[in-house]
Image 1 (cartoon, rainbow, N blue to C red):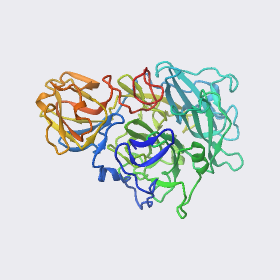
Image 2: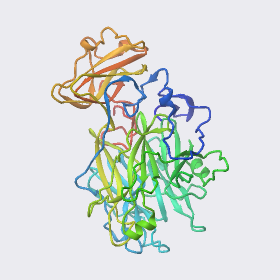
Image 3: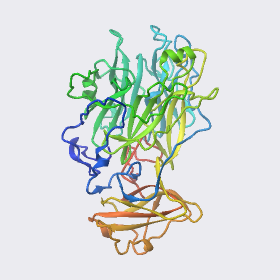
Image 4: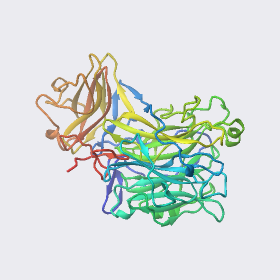
Length: 553
């Protein structure tokens, strides 16, 4: 769901997205539940726009949407785990259940960088045995903060007995969203809490607001009863809040349903359990596990499921994070004293609903060695990635083996990736090429994110007209070649043209000639400083506080 035409003043959705994708009249689309596991259909990859506007964000090669023709290799990359992990772990008595089982990690929740306070902030699930004693496993919400994203402290707050607990409601998952587009300061932070309803012990969303992320309002909206492990996200391309809800299908009890609304209170109020025999006005079936999900090597008979799905806007796409469950079931885990196997995988969307997946290798995987913080049950976290210089910070929760309670001992880990570094287009020793689809633009300066540091590596760009003919002044031999450069933001110039201003208003194609190098992204910026006008995920130091990549005044 990349770039949708959206007027922030009116929150009006049009049928043509900002990246040229035409939305169907029925939105969100309604699909029949499949009889077997399969990939989600992605219509815009089958029928692309005739012309793709590239005015919003860095343009990433995470699928074939931008590519007309290429002989480059598409390479999916994985992040590197921080050697100091875990960056947060349970070390307080009030983070234990009544059994003494420790918990201190987000369960979706949120990790954000607040540019206004210049601080990293984390909300997480903690064991609530000190207050909720009715069950062996009860939880509430803790808060931590950091100056560098690696070293975290748990401040003493005035909410619950001089601890770092900020919300005492008995909960399952939660989503804490730093809404950088919110005009009302009292609603800047939003909590979609999946709380245990005391009357019937069913789960339900309860929406709360906060000005600082610490002092929360009472609930302002509530859902009907839900299944556990549901979450929420905001789609700024179209100005809607989406609820990602657990949903049972014949394929898997761990499938997903979807609901969206521009008003977060209405979105929560419309949410409830549904059955497959009756259509719902607001809730639609979303997706099942793919038939390509990996299986647990020790329990290959277990059919994988989607334990959870979180999403966030990053540059020109929506980045989706799948927590893929590979088994075994809880009773088997308890019998063997092991954690269930969940790992985090990535998907990408350019329309906000349909997600494609370039790789079925874990993006953040388990480490089944003694004492590992992420031996099992890894879960995605809202707000990530954070943009820290040339790196992206991803966080996930993990659980280690322990003797107290098999499903406990959660911690939080950090992994880092090159900025835009999800997928690269790679050339070897022989020069390769990539030609884009027809593009329109209203920027001026062409930038790339590329690794051209290797010996005999080079990258040049040629500009073609919409029919594929080279444009004089922008041909291959006139481009100043990139060599011995490894940069996440590098301007492209030609000998007699420093920018694309002379081509304004024309449809063009870009042809990249690449040798012994990796190309990650390109974009056309209005500013010579190279800001992309894309969305900055969970934020980061030195970025604009409104969540869009633009110069800071």
